[in-house]
Image 1 (tube, rainbow, N blue to C red):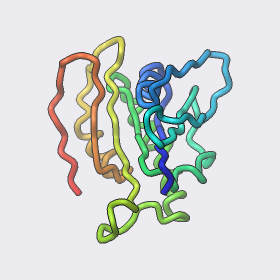
Image 2: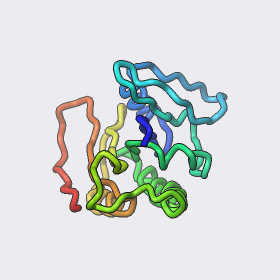
Image 3: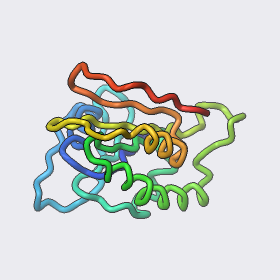
Length: 167
C-alpha cells in the first residue's frame, strides 16, 4: 500500500478546514473553481493526501488511488444529515466496485500493515449546532463502509457519547 490517505465525503467549508489541518497547509477553494481531487504532501511526514476540492461527485475517478491508500477518511458534517446519506448512497457503490476488483479489504488473519484503515469522521460544524441524533445512522455507516474507527472533530470542549465500533 502507498503511504497515502484519501478523503471522501460531501464537500463543505468544514471538510476543507479538516483537510487543511491534516496536511498542515491552508486549502483554498473559490466558488467558481473547477471541482477536483488534488494530491498534497502532508508536512512533516512521508505521506500524501488526496483531497476533495469542491463538490466532487462519487465516481470511479479515484479507482487507482483508493485501493492503494493506507487510510481512507469518510467524512460527514454532524449538522447536515444528508452528508451521511451521501456517503452511503454516493460513495458506497463506488467503494464496492473498487473492492471487488482490487481486494482492498484483507482477511483478518493477514498482517495489519497490509490492511487499509477506514475511518468515519463526524465533523462538528464551525457555525451552527448539532441538532440530530445520528447514532443509529453512524453505526450503520461504520458497518456499511467497513470502517474500523470512528472519530468526531471538534473545536469546542462539548462532547457527545462515544460509539463503540464492533469488529
